[in-house]
Length: 208
Length: 101
Image (cartoon, rainbow over all chains, first blue to last red; front, top):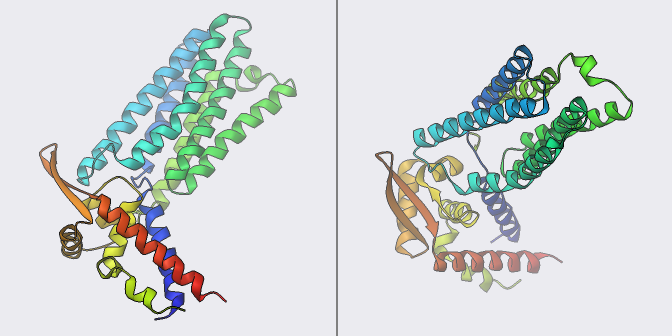
């Protein structure tokens, strides 16, 4: 028997183990629904002039809860359709990867309720959400198809860009007209763009 | 290289399809029949046959339940299966080590 075969077999085993630990549900519909929710949140916040810090946070926490609920329903529906458990091992790993950065984001958002400059507090909230969401997505990406980690980096880059603009004393409120629009652009726009990209590129059976 | 090492490889796990099932199950606590089928690109019949052989050998356990009125079959490695798989990997690594100059 050729010893080279043993090495190839070990490589095959490694690939199969990695593949079986990955989350394999279609992400395009989840990203698109998150994108639409983000854009809708921005439009509602802007039109209803919900500009105080508590109102701003309320709009975006509600949007996040709505997007998360829709995503869970979509994923559950996919799992039931495929006769697979919803709360599978890869799903649990993703939830575990997302929890710490999301918790950090929630705590910092809560701490900033203390008052002060409203616009600055909202900009810092957006900045923190971009960075923590980017970290969470990147961490979850280790249990998902490779592209997700890049998506995490896009959010991190958006956060870094906001830091650069803040350091350069750029008035973001004046630049975008409303910070709700900035949020819609970052969270709604990026999710929608990635969802559309995935819709055309995602394999029907990503495990293959 | 010691040719006995090849003879020590577990014949049940050594088959390509069954090795794939064992590998997939080794990376996660449990997998449903559909998840295994999709991950390994096997037919229902092929997968059922291999699962039965591995089950008879005591390497995997199969649990049947219901989820929203649909039957759900999940497979997981048993303690014996995990040990057999680890031993198989150890042997492969030994073979690779011995084959290197």
